[in-house]
Image (cartoon, rainbow, N blue to C red; front, side, top):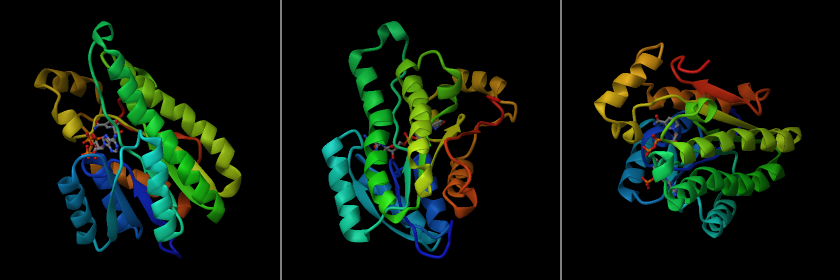
Length: 248
Ligand code: NAP
């Protein structure tokens, strides 16, 4: 990251898993990190402890990303307190899996609301602040299944594919102001989300991953930190896969 002035970063869904690793990595690279979460203050505090362990600093901010008014209030607070936001990582995500014919309306609306609408609300609010400072990095955490599809995950896949399109449109709008917007599409990563999968499903996954293992959240986090750095200024509108070769 650059390196001259301390960057302010917001990572949504940073109380666990990939979000926690991204928050820690950004802090390790010098950013002050705002740790968003929805329902787990204890876990979010553990993220803050992890950040301090690497010599960084941050703070907690609880809000549900799918609530437009709550997002705007949070960004007002960020503006008042920090005067700027340089980095936004839209990481908060949920998955409601099941066969299409058994999927309820609510599975669709909730998944799209958190994964896609939440990223839109936060991206719009962040762009407002970034346009003022004429520098910014927005990273949307998509998924390999948003690129290749997956049975049993219609709403999740739709939300993750939607993030890829939104990334490109936002990248085109914001490029001239030094704001880059990229999507990162992880394959299967060891977190609570994948821990819920049974052994049979995991064994099937292994057959499809040339590298022969699930990824680590830290590996995703280092990629995100690179995309947030000054060195990545010429990368925008891209979907960068990190999937052990599962999708090429
Ligand atoms: P996770 O362990 O289930 O953590 C999800 C995080 O999102 C938690 O911090 C949770 O906060 C937060 N969250 C959930 N709903 C929220 C809401 N409405 N508002 C704000 N925060 C909310 O997930 P993960 O595996 O680390 O995944 C992180 C991201 O990577 C997700 O977008 C996921 O789709 C994507 N991804 C994951 C994998 C994988 O294999 N794990 C692969 C590809 C993509 P609380 O604790 O407060 O609920």
